[in-house]
Image 1 (spheres, rainbow, N blue to C red):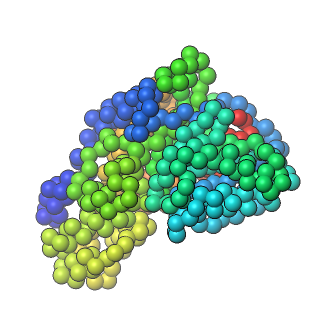
Image 2: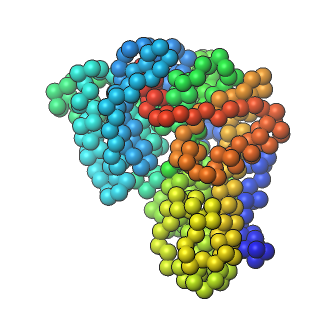
Length: 419
């Protein structure tokens, strides 16, 4: 096992390279820069959304959830402290499998909305990709991540294009609010839990992509030039962070991706990339003959490793050709990469608590969603462990992870109904 540990160390893939205190400070400083100026790294995108109003009861909103993998539509309403989700439908996100045109995405979205337009004119679109939010709560596509390909998308206004398509179909202009999945997750937490229980709230997505969201007074968002103290949701786009040291196999994988050099934190941490990052690292170890001959041959020939499979391997459920020693080494490597991923998120969440000055007098609600957080056997236990040590013991902050079913759908409905 010493050879495997030395292998991870020599290639800079060991979890210990993420110094929790230094990376938390670097993340905090990166967030401050994003509040002061336009930057591609942790851009701190103002959403122009509020989270301080009461949800109206028995009023419908149509929700579109354009996620990193899945695409869903539903009709949502709130009553008596409960949420009602009707007519939910699911399909693969356009461009997630085969490349697609932007016009196809807009037509697909209009198709999903159309059956519900006899019940409401209020539409919420959750768009899980980098987009610049406009003061009228539309969003202009900045780029696509997670290897989704929609040609002609960059620079397009999502709500404007959708309204044009609905008008073409004879429905007229509708009220459309567009937001990212992480602000939607934050608002989902507000919809599900009483705000009075907490000192603050953070939105966190750890799934196909990774991202965070918080609420800050407008006066703190220096680049807006506002002196108002009313709080606004901020989409941090923390997947773009460059605060965490990368190793040889991070760089090798990135070299073979079309968006080389972009969203480097997301490539270290998210479900869209984690399986492949494990594959590159395991293949590197196989090339150095650190496994049995059969395992080396298997890993060198392996052309794809999904994140769910990597999670299974981390529990010891490796291929039949692996010896017990091969399995032990594989488990160690994947655990190191999981550990590193969780450390990055712990630093980010702790930096947000410092930025918002929350969690000192009462706990912070970390409203959480995403397949890594919900489904991985390793992710949440490790995250809670590191957060207790870093945010809790080192910085004296208290917190609670809160999650539920359909967080982004609930939060997107809340966004359109209270804004």
